[in-house]
Image (cartoon, rainbow, N blue to C red; front, side, top):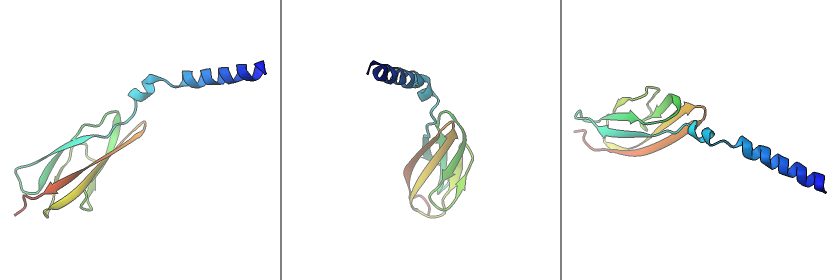
Length: 104
């Protein structure tokens, strides 16, 4: 019985030692902000992701890009769900809803 408890304790000790706070520091976080540009329908996207090497944007209108900080022009007023995937040691995903109303 003592051997089972000792083995269980050692196993838990190894599991605990394998969980490192530094692992959280390397997680990929997808984050962005956006502003409407003076040109009707144009949006400036600012990538605020951390621990990422490449990106995949989906603008909600059927178009996408892998640029870090894209500028995108919508051709119709409407509501668009924009998503950003950030790829690093892990994958982070975020999205935001844009309402475009400045196209004549």
